[in-house]
Length: 143
Image (cartoon, rainbow, N blue to C red):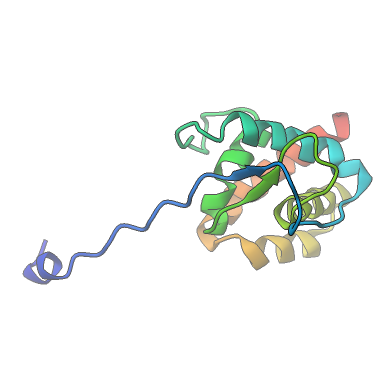
């Protein structure tokens, strides 16, 4: 460590706050495809269940892609993610974005997938978000 590093320390990046699970969608409403509702409901349940939990590592720690995505998407996007409670019949922009990403994986539409990932996800996180979304889309076909 040099003298300049001691004089000008680099601040640690602030952690992204935990996802918010809201009871109302008064200002957050977006349409989603009906075939994606079960996957979004699953992510909502995991977000609600883990909202007070400590951060979970993405790689190898959790075999459930819905849990890993719900707990870590805020870090990948770089801002807080909004999920509604599982009983809500409306969807936030974040939930609609996830539904579109899952639909693009299921349809095999690589251009839409790349666009959706590059439009919101930080470059360093695009790989693991793509893997989790692909796994969740594959599981969504079985739900």
